[in-house]
Length: 420
Ligand code: MG
Image (cartoon, rainbow, N blue to C red; front, side):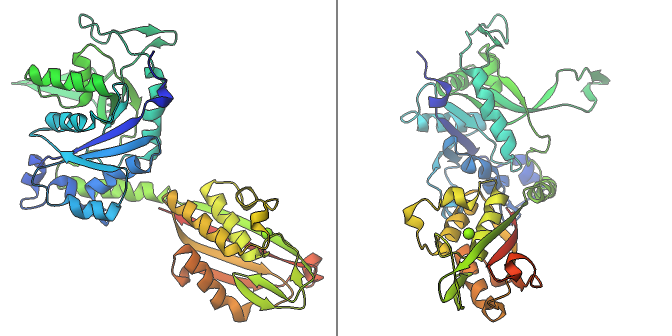
């Protein structure tokens, strides 16, 4: 019995051994295109980003040229245990085969192999997710049927697929030039094959080796699979998932990345209240402030940090502070709320986001917080690992109205903006 889809691991191979003849011709003397500078990193780092961030991808094998002089610096920067390297071959096909051979000792025959171009830096997370989700339809391997290309086993849900390919439908009118002749090609059913593409380990290795034996240089992995009579599933992906081929493509991909980065901004807001009770101080922003009362709270009752944590969790779509640090948990009795903030900051970083700015308002008749603002901001900045100008703390009374005006308690609200 074949293992269920969920137990089949996903390994990624990124062929990065090429020298990029077309790119080199358009930018003489430059590094190979996968190492071209792009928005503070390299093309390759952008191409790897979503693969490294996607939890379903078990490991990423980067196949490098034998004389590669650029990877070591990137590996040190990324410092990611999911990254493995091997040596590529003379062309893309051989490089992917080398990657598969490298994985042979670790990957099961049915494990998934995802192949992504090193020079395709605009892959977005939702397309990668859609591709992996599409593997549900690939649970049953089709029977090879070379007399009928695309044929295969039919499951209850219709035809089954051998793997999946991100692709974008062709929307332009397509011309074919042949000698003196120009003809219009029927674009119905035509797609641009993108990457990643994903196939079962043994099936892909057999297909690529078979193509090599037949002296055929395939231009993508799906072509090798199709040659064997299997049918890959075409998963619609963003037309912006373009490949860097010439030097001028770098400005196009930079624009695409900037545009999509803007859409990854996340806003969040939080609000917290604590009643005054017995005591001689309150804790606000991690600063102990002398007062005629204390606050009633399970933790240290720091409304600034509680509101800020809730705002950040809101922006992350990650629940609320009560869910992460329940007041029924004895571990949090009298807890220093700065610990909560550090945990939330780590969750933000794990989501690939950073604080762009935070704005906090304390609502209280007393104590006055103005004199402590700088110390509070310094604490919050230290816990979040950001510079002081990113966090603004202000305070207001409620003009003696309501529970705050009557001095029964204090509150804080916070707004945050997170971005990549
Ligand atoms: Mg609270």
